[in-house]
Length: 314
Ligand SMILES: NC(=O)c1ccc[n+]([C@@H]2O[C@H](COP(=O)([O-])OP(=O)(O)OC[C@H]3O[C@@H](n4cnc5c(N)ncnc54)[C@H](OP(=O)(O)O)[C@@H]3O)[C@@H](O)[C@H]2O)c1
Image (tube, rainbow, N blue to C red; front, side, top):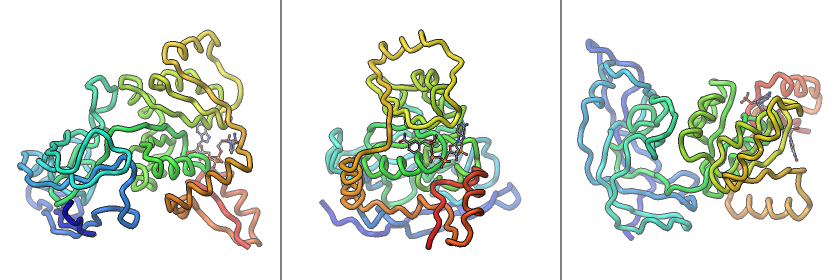
């Protein structure tokens, strides 16, 4: 395998929104080839891009004529011909040297997804595109739907990422989704997250922080053999659905597992995993208060403005 450089060259759209009179341009940048200190996740697939053909939309996004969602300053480019350069330890479908041509709309897999078209993660539009020397993508692997951006969800997010499970985080707040976009590109508003899964193949794991009211929607969102981990009760404990609807679990061979914290042995195993995978917990801490301001810390948590944990430091 050829040595993989720490950084590689790519072209990003220059910041801002272009117009026909004053289009934005593209600029050469140096990009980290692998995040997190150069380690591949278990299901990661690093591809080396060999050629990109230009598309009409690449220009339309420079001069403001493009009609779909775009993000500012992303790597441009809509298609590619590439070869596999490196693989995570759990990848089974590819080998180094395979010639590949990834799909254009990353979230559009089966053709039956009920996803709004502007949420497909289209290369060079609302996610980084192809005009760079390398791109880190992934082999299809397990997915987890994490409800909300609180302490439980954000911790589950870090564990899922380290374990090669693709997280989908849903939230009531677009602002919070924006804040975690780097960690969880598959972050969605509540209704869209559920709808996205209904027509597609569903998710393998649901971390249910909301309690019984959401179980019916959870079952509908579950993939075959999937599991709902019943963790919380943010929406209360009373549900307005009929218990007969649990029968849908049979059709999916699905399960609901109650989670009552963990035992000492679980905690030790978790800590070993965190150490082994070098999981950094910083993104998990939203705000740190001093020992003298506990009331402010409690009020901040109660406000629901946080993403992850609120900490009091001595
Ligand atoms: N079973 C266990 O062992 C265990 C352990 C710890 C916690 N829990 C329980 O798990 C739940 C989550 O705890 P946490 O520490 O993560 O809480 P948290 O830090 O307060 O976060 C909750 C987040 O969930 C979202 N949310 C709040 N109310 C909601 C609602 N009615 N419907 C949907 N989403 C809502 C919000 O995120 P957005 O603003 O992004 O939507 C909020 O920030 C709680 O019920 C807690 O008691 C259970």
